[in-house]
Image 1 (cartoon, rainbow, N blue to C red):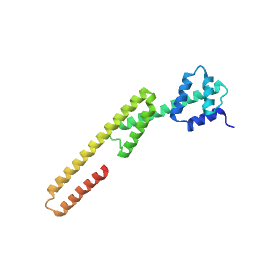
Image 2: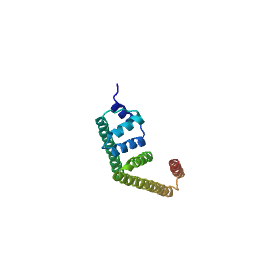
Image 3: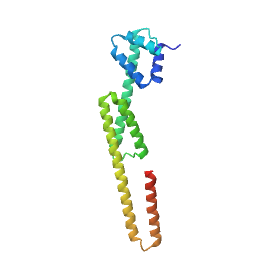
Image 4: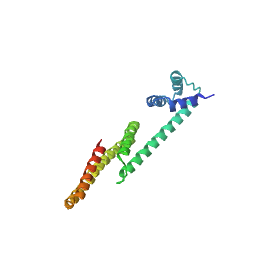
Length: 183
């Protein structure tokens, strides 16, 4: 038979929404001196019958440790992303960059209750935008250099029609590659 405390933990982990958990967290904070009120509310709303205050106190301790662990994981994610973004050749492709952006948005929402982490998340989001801008500039620069090289070859190879045809094919391939990446 499952204890009421175990039922509450399972409910907390698997069924309650973030809003519900936040509501209960606020109840724990506002009724610290009178846990009986929260126990009755748990019984009324969730059909969890904790008979003693120490059961609820144990749950509150567990919940607090869960929050600390989640915060620790989010901080570690932020630090990892910041280190990745600070590396000049991070190797991020467009898909990975978009994935990081999506995670960043989720993290910003999750950290809305913690001002320091929220500020760090905003800084990281700004760094992501700067990285994207630098990536685009780099790609344009590389494209310009390649086209300049092709033009220099074309100028030298105008005497040989076979080389000129290869250069035209190379130009067309670069233009097609650019169009594919834009779509």
